[in-house]
Image (cartoon, rainbow, N blue to C red; front, side, top):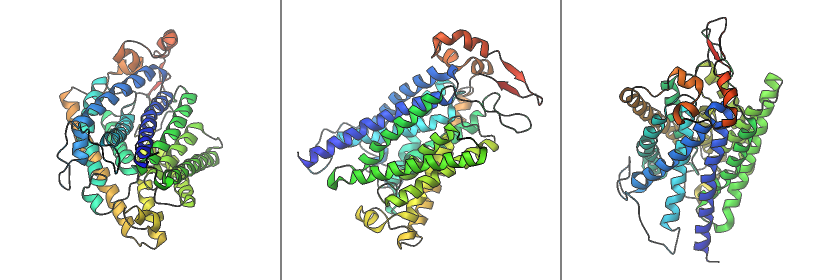
Length: 435
């Protein structure tokens, strides 16, 4: 088979896998939250895919990959190229693959909205994030911008996708404030458990499989079957992250907490995303395991700071996204990193501190940009739209009914109706929502 055709087929398969990851996010987010919001979560995810796709087609691609300057691209809007190169990917295949990464970043960002944001907030922010936040960071690193000129390494998006989405989620979480009943007046936290751990586990498994396309197809071809090496590193890191997180929470609490184990697997995947094409397998295990340890500590830290993150997007994608990006500054090997013409070897391979410095710079400026711009956007939206958060009554009855007029689990309507009335006062006077 012609090698160019094989390259295009492989990246197209990767596109399918990355899109299917959003199905994993639906199950993960729905399972990690209460059943009165499950239908809302599924529905808003689908229509924001539609919004994000159209915005990427209209201006996102042009801002990232169009001819421009160090800050942003400025051409190829309303992308419609039909050209085909005999020496590389079809432009359409490249375009649709890159679109999927934008959609994943948007899906991550919406983790900070969970169980309390108006449907209209999702609509407006989807447009603005896909137009003004993600494309700028992506241009800096992948589109020939100033961080690319410095040799910033991010093979498949620990910074571009995961950290960018997480910083937007952090901005949303701060502005929307915690869910009703999450924190008591004395600062202690109440556990608002998700309604379906099986959904959550299946969502993680779907994401795990999809990540093989996310990272593997970022080779943009099948030459020397290098994608197999990338997938191997991805698998090892995910496995190490799951085991490390489980062992840590087991040692600390005496219980092998399921959500922590699942988040450990995701942490391993996020951690290896930046470095999967630059490091050796033993390093992938170390990177994934450290990601699994970090995610547990980060979850506890954010909760102590009274930052309500229902699906742990800030820890999984934010904290571990930082670690994954920095890890190449330690573990990137000379044959892989230089062979890919992308940056320098890491500290442990004789490259000194230069690449680590570039990675640190990239994390700081990208994270700050994504957070500040998202915060400004959301703050303006909050003022103009008369608030981003649903009313207390709407939050109590659930977003399925208040925003869509029907429950995701209609056969459980009597049970849900009864549970919405179970609002008690604890000894400190804090509300506890028991459903």
